[in-house]
Length: 195
Ligand code: IMP
Image (cartoon, rainbow, N blue to C red; front, side, top):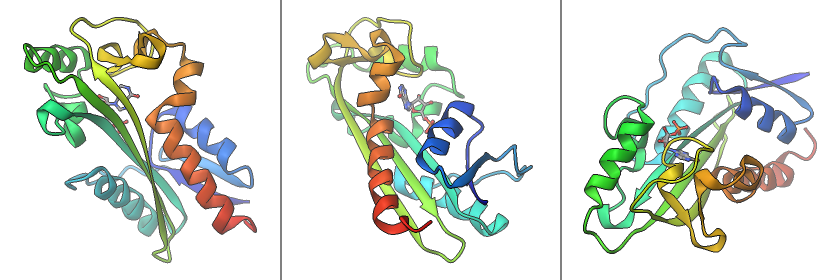
């Protein structure tokens, strides 16, 4: 069976991609003992996802999937964007949310979007990119315990709830990641139905 590596250490993501590619063995970086540092110094989600997938694919000689995601706030001209994980320091969700609400204090335009870009890179240089967006608004007071990252600060008008108040199964239907995954699925079926 052919292998696809997903450039992540998150077991949840591996499971999702395994469903998407039933005819491939989907493995994590840990599964294939890939320990090299992965460069992430692009200026867009696309550049980062592609660079990660390309580096690992070239090193291992097999197809690789990588994603990059974050929060873009309109009033902050798209920040924190690609720096979402490191907005207030290093990967500290709570501090990121505190910083976000401080920056948004007194601002009436609260519109924002979650973005997820997925890259699928083949060792011969062929690649596919998909992008999913989920629109919402930044709250004044965080609410909810589900999810991660900025979920407690991200309000979904249609549900009258923050992303962190939605059950995981609901989030997984409407999230930026779900949309990017579905788009990738379409690309895969269009281009690799024989694989
Ligand atoms: P990564 O692309 O998985 O590294 O995510 C980058 C950062 O974007 C995360 O650390 C979060 O701060 C933020 N982020 C991405 N997706 C979500 C989400 O679904 N909910 C909340 N925050 C997210």
